Length: 149
Image (cartoon, rainbow, N blue to C red):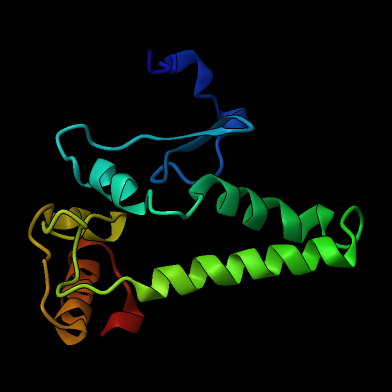
């Protein structure tokens, strides 16, 4: 039976990002929960897509904790070398993934808080230039960014 997370487990004390737009919570050592709009399956599709051999939670834990406390204090040089090798392997795998559009992994529009001004109206894009134009348009619609002009 699949594990169910109770809403009471999602507290500010276990929020991973101190930003109300990013709803990531660490429930325990092996469980991270991301809340998103239930009307879209793009998040679930992205997670299914990422379930190649890339261990997302492991990478997140490493990036979050390694650089703050553990590196050099607890790990040996060989531990760090193994970790770096593993991260290089993950990055090589990510770089090997080729696509023919920029958008959500299920082929729909881009999903990110940057694009919240008009959900579903940004992408998918055929080129990086089109994506950059869409990004600028989204930022102009949703907030005042003098550096975008």
